[in-house]
Image (cartoon, rainbow, N blue to C red; front, side, top):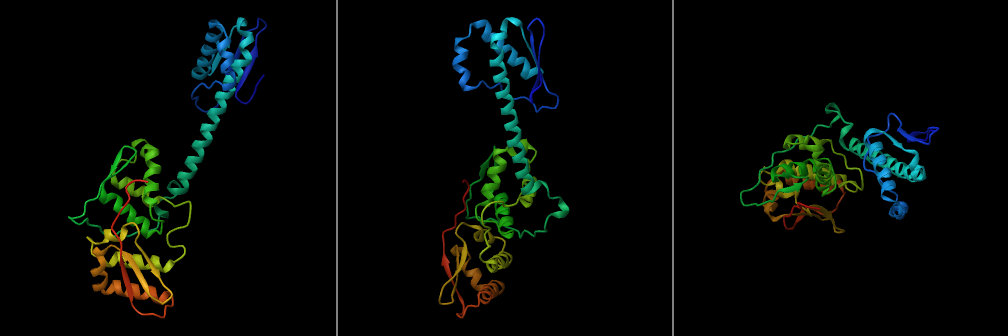
Length: 290
């Protein structure tokens, strides 16, 4: 007799043999159905030992034999084996879904298929103290995660997507340590795809252009302030543009010709009747945990 998990045979003497089918996934834990837990408590020690030994042999060797004296516990062993095998299949399904998700994010794209991204240099001002990000036993230094935030800004990802990225790989222990250098992690970040929810500039593509221009216009030691939480651009009914950003870059935005031109281009892209733009200071913050 065969089911989807094993072959079952009974000898004329009453000996029962379970042989796991070839090609089945690697066995995990032996799972006892909760509905059978009470039944186990009523078995005598010999019968309980027969069940456990047979289950162990099946899990380790893919083959177990119950002697004729254990015939009455055969149905229980079958339920234990089937429940355990179902758990194996579930684990494979979850793993396959995880790999599919990873492939959708980065794995299916070759180097030749990656869009080219210029990452303007970022220097951390001496007066600015930023903590590291801890993820999956790896410490992500500020310079590294700022580059990831910058890459995700350039690609138009929602704020905070970098924490989703670090959380995903942290849960997977950075592919068991194979993604073990800043360059390797940045490579994965450049392959990462935001799968869920609206992207940052879906409702305002002109803002994407504006932020790319500002990022390139600012000095290397001031770009970090454009990457903080709460940085955005808004318009009002009177035709004014307002840039919400840390005060540390207010003077640079005002003095840099390229930055002023970018804000004027944004105003024109929205066909605003008003002139000029304003600046709304926001505190500089970068989240380091979800």
